[in-house]
Length: 186
Image (cartoon, rainbow, N blue to C red; front, side, top):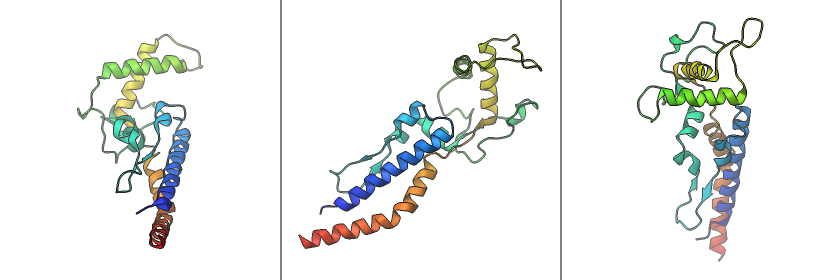
């Protein structure tokens, strides 16, 4: 049985979800990231079942962390002067310090030091002038804040997927009915 109409609708659905996901990533200031570039979908027309895959979610834990956020280890350890306070992802299934993922805090702080250097994030005094303290120290502080308060969720994929299902639900049904009708005419 040929399902040409349904396949066409599935392609439109996949394109819609990818476009919406990339828009949400851009709004979350992750527009130029490698994750942004990896957001895609596949439809295998050879299989008997209709399947739309979003392979970037199966291969990249980072995509799941960005979508769902990551709970902090201990938000009470954040400085009282911090601009962002409290748990950033209280409903997330992921948590810093749970021991289920690879990596060390030292490696994380080194990555944050590189980030601070790239973005020229430096210590400042009350008047806004640069203070003593290198990127390594800044990286340690940034990593500590992220580790303890977590990462806020973006729902870049889950909201896009849910919206797509709502928008295309009736079209899937009508496309399938049209395919049945087309096959009966043969």
